Length: 248
Image (tube, rainbow, N blue to C red; front, top):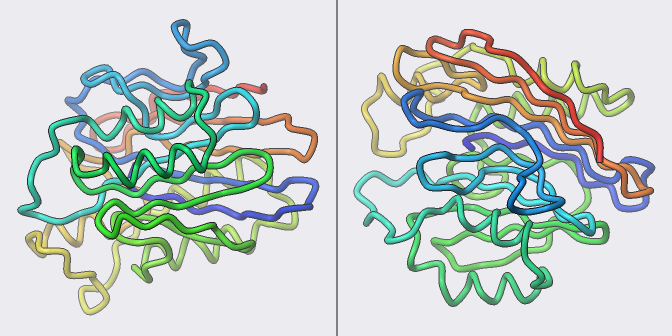
């Protein structure tokens, strides 16, 4: 997952809204959003190469979402980052207990950001800093750096989410994830990759022959605990493959 924008609004009739793009190599096999037969109550996409996920919900109002931290040359982690949201969604540890686990075990993984939530709270963990922070009420964005790092695509997409808060319908939230416009060269972040790659990665929606946005996912959480998930899937060069909507 390479871009997440969210509105965290405790006490609101819709306390959590999430719109997220998962960017990945097209050759990496994955399964679209579905309930996992081996983990009752877990609804998420699934990475079929390593078995984990990048975004999903679980029993008791649980929510988790993952992004990688872009740092060329960082050591390859011994374990797959996708197992972390999977473990939280399908496990019994509280958020506090899971954050403690992350503090102790994050060195086993390449750099990552992890969002963890339930019906009362939302937290962000940055593995490079080994720091857990309660997410304040408001609109936030997360890509392949720290929370709210002002990359152009995050700024655009956060503003688009803010503008949609009056009537946050799934289709409108999916559309704000579909912007293919790259940042101007002068505004590109400098993360250590080739400038042409930096330019490709600077758009909200990424499309190329080998790597791009594989899934756009929207989550709407209601105050009564009910949730709606809507996901669009894409293939090579951004070709639309289909979509699924689930309520739980």
